[in-house]
Amino acid sequence: MSQETLIMAVAQTSAQPGDVRANAAAAAALVSAAGAAGAKLLLFPELSLTGYDLDLFDTPAARATDDDPGVWVTEDDPRLDVVRRAARDHGVTTVLGAACRRADGTPWIASLALRPDGTVHTYGKRHLHGRERDLFRPGDQDGLLDVDGWQVALAICYDAGVPAHAERAARSGAEVYAGSVLYTLEEARRLDLHFGARAMDHRMYAIAANHAGTGPGWVSCGGSGAWHPDGTRLTQATALPGLFTATLSRADLHTLRAKDTRAGYPRPSSQDTAVRA
Image (cartoon, rainbow, N blue to C red; front, side, top):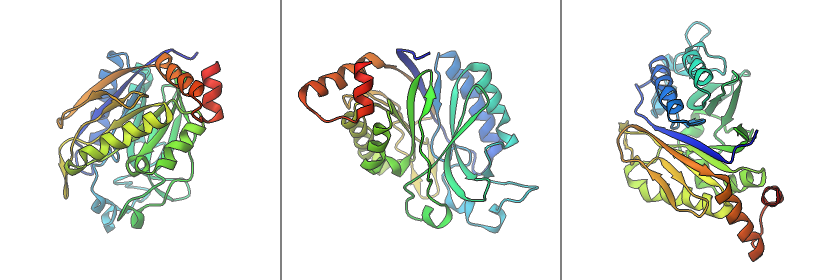
C-alpha cells in the first residue's frame, strides 16, 4: 500500500578500511537505530563496506577467490547476513555501498538494496570517474526500488553529476533520487548544487549519504541529507559520523508537479499520471 509520507535515513559513516565484515556489523546497528526512528529507507555512502580506497581493488591480494572473497561481495554474500536480519527485523530497506562481483564476474561499484522480504535490488554505477574506469565496469541496469509504495531511483556519486541520469530516473516515475556518494571538502558546494538541482528540475526528493572523515588523498565534506522537490535543503549533516532522518511528503511533491503542469512546464508522462492520480 502506498504511503503518503516516507521517513528516510542517511548514514554518514567512516568505514574500517577493507573490512567488509566489520562494516556490515556496524551497518546493522544503524539499521536498528533507523528502524527505531520510523525510517523505511536507509542509505549508506559509496563503497561503505570497504571505504573509498581504490588501491584495495588493484592489488593481487584484492583478487577474490572462492575461499576468500576479500573486499569483493556478491548479492548473497554471507557476511551481509547480519544486515539482512536487521533489515527484516526492523522493516528497513537498507542500501549498502559495495564492490560487487556479478554472477558472470563483472566488477561493479554497486548499491545493494537489502529489503525486509529478503530480496536484493542491485544497481551498478553507470558513470565511473577517473581511475574507477580501470577497475570496474559501468552498470547497465536501472529500475526503481519500491519502498512503501514510493518509487526510489538509486545513484552513485558521479551519476548525480550527469543530468541525464536523473532525467532518465524521473521519466521512469522516480519520486526519490537516492545517491550514495563521496564528496570531498572542496566539493561541498558541488554536493548541494547537484542534489538540489536534481530535486528541483524533476520535482522529486533527493537524498545523499556521504562519507565521514578521511581516506587516502581525500577529506570528506560531510553534508549528507535530503532536498525538497523545490530544491531547498531539508536536512544537512555536519562532517561528523551520524544518522540523519527526514520525512518526505507526497502531497508536497504532487502540489509542485501540478503547479508546473498548469504553468506549461513539460513533465514526463509518468509524472503527469502521478499528479492526476
